[in-house]
Length: 298
Ligand SMILES: Cc1cc2nc3c(=O)[nH]c(=O)nc-3n(C[C@H](O)[C@H](O)[C@H](O)COP(=O)(O)OP(=O)(O)OC[C@H]3O[C@@H](n4cnc5c(N)ncnc54)[C@H](O)[C@@H]3O)c2cc1C
Image 1 (spheres, rainbow, N blue to C red):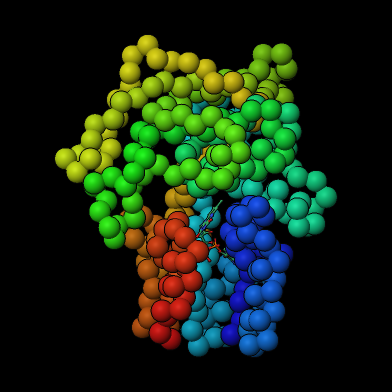
Image 2 (image 1 turned 180 degrees about the vertical axis):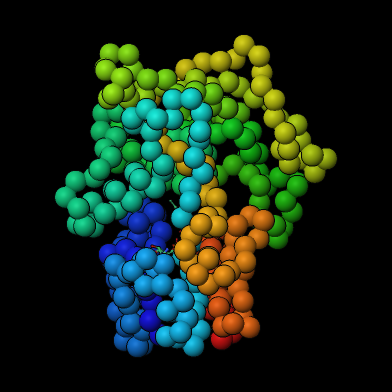
């Protein structure tokens, strides 16, 4: 069995997304040694679709398992997005991971002494909070467009459903302001620097109110008049989820893979092509990715 990986190191989001304070990267190195001892070969720095074609892989191997994750992050295309200092969450997290593991000598984005705004209230946002705090941010604020979930499991998600409820991570406990029901309208630039080097200085937001389904799930929001305000920020991190696998990904066209309406990849067992992990399920969790690999019947 051969694994082709476009990065310098294997591990995907475990290595480059999840911060070192949540997952010690030595565990991935240890696992790689175990897998190699079992006979698995790793070919790194090799992007399928560019360095080798997916068609070639298909001819070379009896079966192909596609496990490319969900590389496209959701962006926030509001006025001012072109300003400096606005980054997708993974730009911060990957840079810090590569720095801490010695791949690069300096983190490309550094929150030290800066006012940080994280847009997106989920786990990736929480990792940006923890990373910013560790880099020495002056302040960290995390905002979310959705309403604040209840403190206890909501009646709309009885066991065994994943409970809809407020989650507070260790990063949140380390010190950040969390706010909900805020819609971002535009990024505002600093006016003390020339336009070519214009950097963000804040985000104009408005409060929103949600309409709920009979089961208690938030369905639709509308703006609350006269609630606009500016949240100051020297750096903004966008942590609003991932949008699946773009149809233009060469692996999709070269292997002629079908996609669901949510752009997840659909396996084609008749041709011995299988899809596992986030690329098949949408952005999810490590255990689910592992389980989908283990349940493969090739
Ligand atoms: C910031 C962050 C924090 C998270 N924290 C947690 C957590 O605490 N707990 C948890 O359970 N889950 C967490 N997750 C989710 C978890 O990381 C993913 O569900 C899991 O990594 C999915 O595994 P995967 O193998 O499907 O995809 P990935 O981990 O994305 O791996 C895909 C791999 O394919 C490679 N690849 C892509 N295209 C090509 C190509 N053309 N050629 C060669 N290689 C290619 C990529 O470089 C990558 O190595 C987190 C996710 C993020 C973004």
